Length: 153
Image (cartoon, rainbow, N blue to C red; front, top):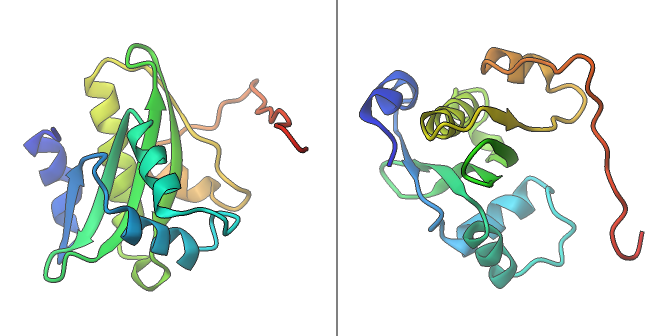
């Protein structure tokens, strides 16, 4: 559960948007958001999305308060002890530049920190550096990200 202090500090700044901590995000709305943002390769189904969220340690979502429309989400995978990796920060293109993305980052990372997780990491695409720094992220000097090929690569 998100502490009220986290919600008050970050979530209440965005008018007309309700934030919640739950992995039970509607897979049809999430799939539509993935497709709207061209985030995945297009072969995913609602079952794929359901499994992705079920396998996550935590997720935070943003919904339009009046309609319940899913506007964005952010999820984390973690061992629940010391490390967490943040994945798939998505905000519907029509709702960007309103503070939703920053609130999602701060709420999820704040929740993880409250759980005692000290290594909270994400990989941002080029051009997102200023956004993540605004959200409290620090570039990890002296560290390099690696991607390992999977099957078929």
